[in-house]
Image 1: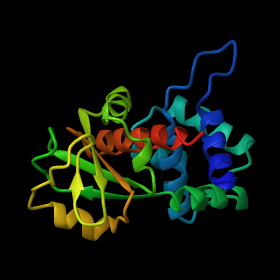
Image 2: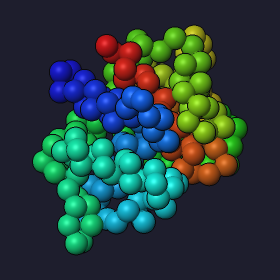
Image 3: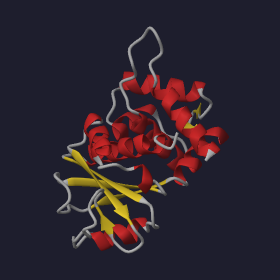
Image 4: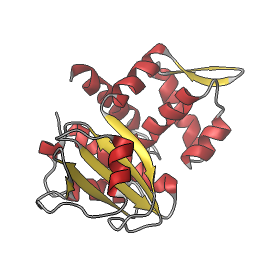
Length: 209
């Protein structure tokens, strides 16, 4: 767990306020998505990054400057790419979480849904309220937390199995193992659902200490 904690610390540091200035106008989940976007292309520009993250140009300049200062990103004429350190951080997060877009489900409250699986984190979940609040704070309309026991999905504190025609789709796409957690963020926009779900997942990872 040491390496994964280092990656969390990096993201926490990038999202932290630099005194005496204002806190950054982005969330830790934006940092994770930025790394994913930069790592998925051979060079990406600030304009496209701004559009994909739903953040203003000034906020993107701040984020990119801090990513470069941290040694995670480098720039060239073709655009930004990940450094070896950036690839390592993204890889470590990939070992902890898995994500997918979802169709509308009975468990959700919005038209756009995005699910994040957090590996081996079931014992950290209380009633799912903390994950919901983290998603709401990040701009989602809500979040549902599900636990996988090796056979079925169920909500925290309840042993009733989830009955939904899309639950099989969820299991096939994320392939959870016993003790894994699935957080479904929901919103009017797919981006807000994704950022909400990833914010909740990152909060849960922090609970590992």
